[in-house]
Image (cartoon, rainbow, N blue to C red; front, top):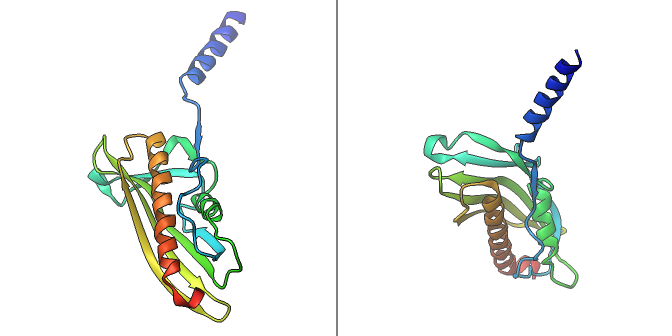
Length: 179
């Protein structure tokens, strides 16, 4: 009986030893280089399924409409919260006349082959003043060179987020109703 118990415990421990540890990623410690014009970040939200901490990918070479999640990797917070943090780190100084509302519609690593992928972010953005919507538009950011696994994909997402902040900043600066 004792030998059977020891054998069972050894088998369980052996099975657990083969499971890789979960890895958690965010967008890094550096704030994006581009500063946003004076604007209030009113809301950043995600549509499902990007409202959780799963790191999603698509195997476009097989079926671009199939969405999957990395088994042992996740975001430190939902992508909308990671994006919000980056936006807040770039805020200009002063009193904001407008608020920025962002809906994150895509936040995935898209594989064109087994070895090559890109980071893809799609946003729908509205700029509001106290009276009404000043402007709205969509942004699609594609960052090539996302590698073949979650870690390189997270690095590419950080670069894509920096590009998104830069494009948002240029767009907001061009809106006369918020200057």
